[in-house]
Amino acid sequence: MPLPRPRAPLQGVLFVILLLSSAVFSAPRPTQATLIVRGDYLLTMEEGATPLADAAVVVRDDKILAVGAWSDISRQYEAPETLSGSGRILMPGLINGHTHTSMTLFRGMVDDLDLMTWLNQYVFPMEGRFVDPEFVGIGTELACWEMIQGGTTSFVDMYFYPDVIAQTVIDCGLRAVVAAPHIDFPSPGFKGWDDSFAAAIEFVKAWQGRHPRITPAFAPHAPYTVSPEHIAMTAAVAGELNAPISMHLAEAPSESEFIWQRYETTPIQHVAATGLFEARVIGAHMVQLDQADIDLVAAKGVGAIHNPTSNMKLGAGVAPVVDMLAAGVNVGLGTDGAASNNDLDMWEELRLAALLHKLKSADPTAIPAPTALAMATRLGAAATGLDAQVGQLVVGMQADMIQVDFTRTRQQPLYDVPSHLVYVLDSQDVQTTIVAGQVLMRDRQVLTIDEEALRQRVQRKRDEIRAALIATGKPQ
Image (tube, rainbow, N blue to C red; front, side):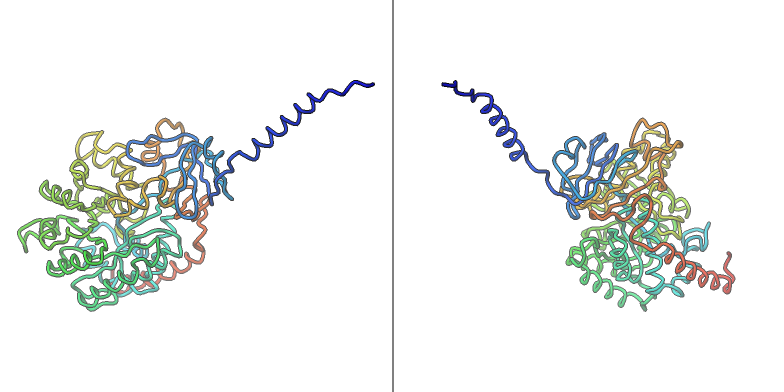
């Protein structure tokens, strides 16, 4: 009788197969995302955080789903597209806290003048002649193209025909606080205060909650163009509607002199007496402040936007940024309009903000590179009221980010990432721009704007403006 065949080896093989099958079927499946963006270095811009090496941001729809080391992200998440981070720094998009986008069409129209001459003899007359919905649409699209190229993902705008601006921003893919201007004098589309203020109220009401990337706001131009009674009216309505206010404040010595002669106080104390600071205020320029002004601004939570290029070009002075930061004021950066800068390059503002205050204070530690970066991201978001959405790469916030190349020979060697971003890299090094999870620029190609068609429209408008300047005898 044959001996029975041994069964142990077969049973062992089956046991191993069952174990392997169990492991395969019990392994957690990667979480689905819509986009993963990598970087050799990643700056979240959280306060006190240091750069992460070989890291990534995971995006689902318009929000950040996860942030961490690539070794962890690659195991836990998958997406239809992963953007390579080789040779790139991944960081939040820049925030331009004060500009006039449509004024790109006045870029270089007239330069090297003081603020009041520049405004009254050139800008205001040319605005009255040329600013209409077509002008605003072309100028805003040109500004959006420039900002996308330079890695600016959010901005605060103050200009006429805000409905046109808002729709153009939506079409281009950026994020903006769009502030409707109102002024005591005739302006494009308006006879004076009554109709411009009514239109601003209508705009804010119409756009609140209308689109997730647009925040409507009020824009009483400045203390020297809007009476205290009218500033009080804006503050009251803005408070009722819970809408922000963007306003030029303490911009230049000429403004301070005007306010002192009329009211015997400073511009900051003047507008505070109207109740302006009971609303959410984004103060543009904020150059002419004394310590009492700074303490008041800090106590009221006013956001201050520092515009170093524009302030220097117009001879307006140097804002007391170091003192404002020390007092706890959220200070962001802005370019102002391209008519007084003459570009919308936030990397220039970053570098100048770091250098200018070292010179003014004779202290090379005054504004270190990480602080300058914070002013263009986290602090800028707080100053503009966007800090719940942008300014940092953290879970739950909007997926607004950029990739910056650092591999070119002129950029070598790299030791310190924040220092390199402020003192070495520039707008031409931005490779990728993403807003709300949508890629707006890939490998320096803007995907949301027809560049050639835009150039043609800009050239036609330039020819009209140049002909008008020649006819009126203005310098060319």
